[in-house]
Image 1 (cartoon, each protein chain N blue to C red):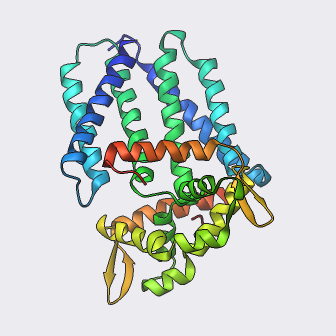
Image 2: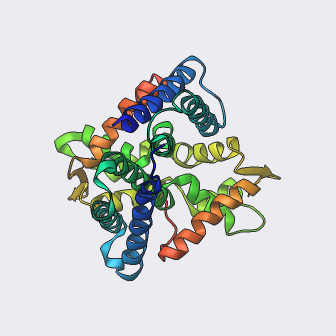
Length: 159
Length: 159
């Protein structure tokens, strides 16, 4: 049980630091990287302080998994997921329901696509050259991972 | 650290089983659908965990496996729904880059709304009657509310 207790305690400590940093001074770019750094350095501190606990390795693995689960969920909280916005708008419409055209009016290219292109530029995954967007080495690597995985699944392009 | 630390690998072995089952089911039984294949893979990994896990570490290994399964679900989901990944995939298909106009020609707001509505209807989360959309079940709506609450805690704003 000490593994669960200390693992969750360290995770919530990192979460608290993250919330304090975000509420005091929201980073302008590379937020996921800064978040990963907060979780990493909290782990380093936790691993030094709690080095005498039994099942030390379990504690580290559990903490890393908690941190990873939070980090992968973070982008969905940062950028509004269109599916969640659609569902929220449909729920707001209540019993009268919602027509697709109303969604077309509220969710524009600017909000759904251009804002994500700006994120990719801020995270150095793409770059702009002579009016065209090109992949950076980081972007090429990331797209390669997904291209290969989707090929393995025989799945078409998502989105 | 305990005397025997090999149990730490058990959730990872179960995750491998989860991934193998999920990919096999989706690839060879495409009618199953991505979401069902993910649930099936997760359930098989979960069963494997109960069969091979030493009882004493059950709680932490259970949580570690659930978190690993969640991360894998997110990875698959990113390839399926993330707009940034879709834009990266579009850029990876051309060598000379794409202008904003080219990107919007391949992937735009209308496309995103249509795909997501189709997916939500297909999964029973939204229903369509006489061209109007209504909430089908509360799963995604609950997620939308949870995300909105988390967002207000992290960023101090509500959508």
